[in-house]
Structure formats: C-alpha cells, structure tokens
Image (cartoon, rainbow, N blue to C red; front, side):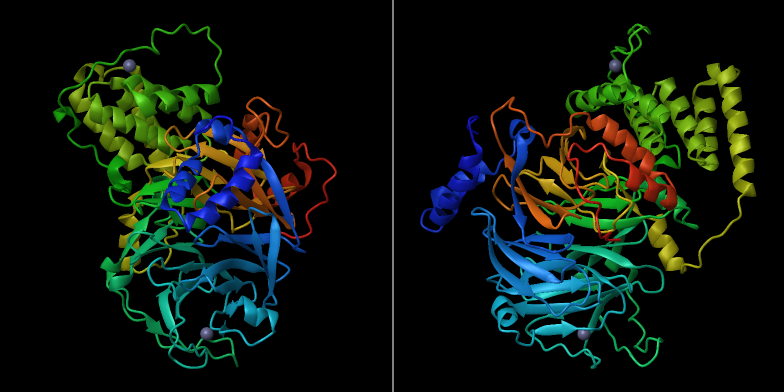
Amino acid sequence: MDGSLRKTDVSCNIVKLLQGREKKAEIGNILQQHSQFTDALIKRLGLEHELEGHQGCVNCLQWSSDGRRLASGSDDTNVMIWDPFRHRLLKTVHTPHIGNIFSVKFVGSDDSLIATGAGDCRVVVQSVEQAVRHQTPHLDCGCHMGRVKRLATSPDEPLLFWSASEDGLVIQYDMREPHECASTKSKVFVDLSYTSEVKCIAVNPVRSHLIAIGANDCFIRLFDRRMVKTSTYRINHTNDLRKRTPPEPQDPRCVQYFAPGHLAKDARGDMTYKLAATYVTFDSSGSDMLVNMGGEQIYLFDINNPRYVNELCVPENASNTKNVRPCCNIYRSRSNGTKITSNRKLLKCNKKISSQPCACDFIERARTLFNRKWTGDVYSAARDYLHVIRNWNDNKDAYIGLIQCLIALNWSDEAYHWLDYFSSNFVDYNDSAQIKTLHDDIASCKTKKDEEINSEKAFSDEEKQLRLESRDYETHFIGHCNTTTDIKEANFLGENANFICAGSDDGIIFIWDRKTTNIATALWGDGSIVNCVQPHPSACLIATSGIDPMVKLWSPTGEEGAENSRVVVDPWAAIEANQQRMVMDPFENMLANMGYRVSPLEGQDTPTCRTS
Ligand SMILES: [Zn+2]
Ligand SMILES: [Zn+2]
C-alpha cells in the first residue's frame, strides 16, 4: 500500500476505480489492494464526512453488494439511500412503518428491493419506485407480535430472507411466493417463543445453509437449514392468545449452541444477570463467527474447530504430553521494582502470545487477568493456565493458578478434581501450606454453593443438553460497553478480517487487532452511543451511526503524525470506565450515562432517543 494515500485519493479515486471496474478486471484488483487495511491506515482513520438528512437515531446501515450505495434506517421511519463516494443523498424511501426501523437490507439479485424490520413489529419490502409513488409495498407483513430486530438475506438466493423478532420467532420470506399474513402459509423458521426473544440473525456467506441466531441469553444457536422443518403459523389478532399450529418437532441435530464457557455454565440454571447477543456475523471465509454479547464482551468462535465449554471441567491425563519445551523463565528473573500497569502488561503478553509464546507468557497473562477481574477475566485466565498444563505439564504454577481460578468462578467440583489430580502427580507438595489453603477454599466455596437456592429454569431436557454441549469461544475483545442499547454491532474489518470493530455506549468506535486482541485505535463516533459499524465491502471506508441523526463515514485521512481530533487520546480511561459501567445495575448505569462524558465534542445536545 502506498504510504502517501490521502483523503482525496480515497474518496475520489475509488469512484473512478468503481466506474472502471466494469470495463477492466485489473482495476478491480487495484480496488482490492486499496481495501487492505493495514495497521498504519487504521491509525490514520478519521472522519471523512457526515451524511445528514435523518430526523432521528440511525439504527441500521447496509451496503449494497457492489458497494456503490449505502442504505440507512432510522427512528424517523425513513430509509435513505446514499452515494458514499460523492457524499450525496440519492433517494429517501418513506416506509409505512410507524415504529423505529431497526434493520434494512437490499433484497433481489440487483439490490432493487428494500426490506425493513421495525419496532411496529412489521416487515416491509418495497422498491424505491414504489415508495416514491406511494404504491402498496410488495410485502407488508404483520405476522410478528414483537419488535423486529434484524433481517438476514441469503448470499445465493437473493429473494429469500429471514426476520428475527422479540416474539421469539424467525420467519422465512420468499419473494417468489405470495405472503399472506392471514393464511397458514407463513413459514416459521425457528420458534424460541417459549424461552427467548430473538435479537439477531446472520447467514453464513460460504455455507448459506448455516444460520446463526442470537437471543436474550448468552447462546448463539447455529441452525442447519437443511435439517430445520419450518412450521406454519397463524395469529389471531382478536385476543392476546396466539392461535397457531404447534411448532414442528425439530431434530436436535439441526442446531449447535455456542456460548462463552463461563456464561454457558451459569446459564444452565437461572441467569443472574442480563445478557443478550445484540449482533452476530461471519467472516468472509464463513469459518469464524463474531458475537457482540450485550452485558458482556465481544466473542469470536471458530465454528469449524470449536473448543468445548467443559474442557476445564475434567482433568485429562496431562502428564502424557511429550516434547515439552523448557520455559525461558523470563518473568521470574525480572526485578520486582518495575512498576508496570496490568493493562500494559497484558498488551505485551498478548503480542508475545500471538507470535512466539512461552509458558511464562501465558502464566503472566493469566495472573494479570486473575488480579484485574474484569468481566470474563477469571475464565480467560483459567483457559491460559489449562493451555500451559497441556503444553508444559510440569508447570506447578499453572495447576495452582487454574485451581484458584476455578474457586473464584465458584466451580468447586472442578477445582476439587484438579486439586486431586495435582496431589497425585506432585506428591512432594501435598503437605505445603498452599495446598492446605486450596483445600479450605474449595470447602468454603462448596458450602456457599450448596446454600444458594437451586432455581433451575424449566427447560426441556433437550434444551438443557444443547446448552451443556455448547461450544466455547476462541478469543475475545475487551474495551467497549454494550448495555444501553440492544442493536450494537461488531464486525470484521479489512479484506483478511485482520481487525474487529464495534461501537460502544460511550460514543466510541473501538478497533482491535484480531491476532493480538489489543486495541488498534479508538475514535469518537457519536455524541452518546455508537450502535452500527459497517465496513465497506471492498474499499477502505467505514460507515457508522448511533444516536446522532446522521451517518458518519471514516477513511484513512491526513498525513501520518497529523493531529486527528477524533482519536481517543487516552483509550484506557474510557475502557476502564466501560468495564465498571458493564457491571453496574441498570439505574446506576442510567446515571452514569447522564453524567459520564470524557468526549472532546463539547456542546452536543443530550440524545432525545434511546434505542433499547
Ligand atoms: Zn405476514
Ligand atoms: Zn518462558
């Protein structure tokens, strides 16, 4: 990539490239090269333009498949179609919705139809021309009984799409067939109405038969469409009771659950805190699934080589491991006088672990995480210790560390099994004070656990089994806060998806390096909350939106070293505030949202709408 790429190059040359793309295949290749986000370009990201026109929060953004148009949906019930490179409004599509638009998608092979889902529980499909002439839309569906939160289209069947609603249903639409709400023809793809509200949905771009669904819990359900039996559905608007044919019994093999291990274990019984998957997406290879977990962090799952949530539970025969590389012991030799903050320590460990890790890097990271104790930290530390045990099985510190983590997680049975295993393999330590303390800690942890009221939810045995067999995450990304709205996105960024981006309750756009999981940059993106972060399908361009009534476009701007007022100067202050905000109760949170502002964008109005 040419280091001297300027703002004008990005906004103007890409127009020429897109125009030329049809004529010459090579130009397409140049565009591909331009789209490659590098670390240097990420660091130079700045505000390119604000697209103004909406009269309310902008809750959803969607690029057309060729990247020439951007659609935005808003609380003002309008969809606006923009030319992102000329910064021009092309069309305002008035929709028949009477509630906030939460999702907009281009439908049809030429992206000629606009599908919207909204707070009025309706799903609408119309062409731009229809909307301009105020004609009846192709589809105006009132089948849902809850707010429609997200739509998903299929990459290989352009007239097929799905709607995810808080009534717990996912409805399937095929624009080749008529849809009559009153008839029994409506197709319910998934019915979770007895347990959950559906919040988000995504179709795998490579294996389009895989459809991921997120709900108001910690589980992402990955359905195989080939095995799902759609059921028919009929509502009765005259009373509150839904009259519909019961859902078809599903083959349990049609779905695989994914959840961060520490959450999955807690969620087997009653949920103690509020969680909701607010966004799910796949990378372009279709093998990695990214989830923005409301009330928690952002998690990346490898769906082809998943980890098992119960891998921490039973000590395996770790002493069989061969070819153990000796530890360099670099951290032990370091003097105790160095004052290094835990966050700085973690950045270093993450970097080392992503290149040439040694046992001590994992131990150092695990210890730091265990002491920091942000949401998910203790579980993450436990996984680091387990990794050391598997690869350096004589590392006594890893066993002790893992057992301490399990006690902190309140997993007394697992802690006891590991302690038992450790005692039988390291007999020399059995009389040590440390082992005695661990025994006492497990005992008190067990008593505490027994005293807790066992309030297991009345899930079916099938549901319990699916939750128990959830697949665990691969890596996670920490920095943002996602508790105030339930439409916050997280996306892969760059041609090779080497970055992860997401908005936050504090108005910041966070971008992480995918490999190290460290923050690459943080930008002030909204006066209050950033919900949508949508990278352009091929160019170095990102569209964002939130509470402010405008769409913002971001691109590498200015020269290296030039001042960029949008860059968050002290991201760690914001990150720490976000972690505290995440564990506050909702009332405290509301107060924090009113009072907390470290944004340099002074004088902005208080937001008038909250999308929750
Ligand atoms: Zn309908
Ligand atoms: Zn080492």
